Length: 491
Image (cartoon, rainbow, N blue to C red; front, side):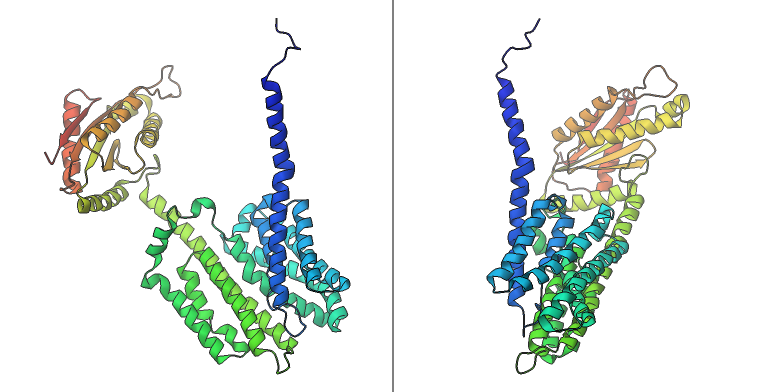
């Protein structure tokens, strides 16, 4: 009988590990996240403060949109310490740039209250709404932006009365328009950031493939229209980029569109307001500034709406393509998709004189399985074989269901020995896999016959390889089934 008070050397180590893990999760990581968030907010506040013109509000204020976007896009940042650190970033930025205490408090209470309302609205939505993958998600984002801007405007109106002697209505309108354009310009960029899995594994190679006339033309058109608008000047310059932005929206990903929109909005706000809407004494025409900001908000929203529609359309096209190219039962590529993918792969191998192999696979006595156990049992056999392909084949191999119980596999850069090893793995795996049949006391065991054709230099066509593999499959059937027969074409 064991002694309940016996000493275990592993116990203190386990307790120490548990304590360390608890400390990391409850204190260390939240503190680091809060410090990073507060520092970023502080830096963006300084940027906004230095963009102030003529004693007015900042020409561009990205801090609020940044804070809201991070809290929504990365929920692990959303905790009390993050809010405290962000608030510290706001107040510290105004403090070190000479703002009075009353001005500091009024301005930043308006900033934080707007972010809080936007976060509350987003927090009530489904997670899918936070990625701008549908038009409804963009409308929901717009609702959150309007709510956040309105809340900031209500408190900001008090600040505008105190700082600029504005009326309540005018103070609210100016603050609301300022928040609206800043949110629309920056928030979509953060919400559309791709996940880590969506980033290309080789970014430089991916970027090189994007440098084509078709890909760069929208960006070039955007730059030219922005330069032309700057040369012409005036409030109407905000509209010069609209056609190019729409072209970008239908040509690029949503994130790229949002990235472009962000820079266009920032440039437009700073360039137009500083260079066009101030008089000779550097005083802003504040009514005109408010009008430009409202108009620019709608301009910036247009490519985001179009981009979200394009995302939804691409997703629909991809789903339809999957349905058109895949067998519904096994979820494998159908005959047409298999032939297209294999032909394309073979062409690349021909250029490099690399080897390839083809497997033709047929389930033995499949008609008998359907007759004795029913078509549901036959479907189970087909599905199980489809799963075995995923377990036995290499990542680069192409498999397809040609029809009925017949399958084919194209194996690029596979020698005869490599292909034989894979074929035997498939054959043995199915042979030893029992398939449960409802109503039957004994599980069903099935086998496959496989024909293998290899070409050391990929010199023949895919049709020739399929014919030769099919001939080997016929021989395997003749010789008793449940076996692999192979032929080498180039020898």
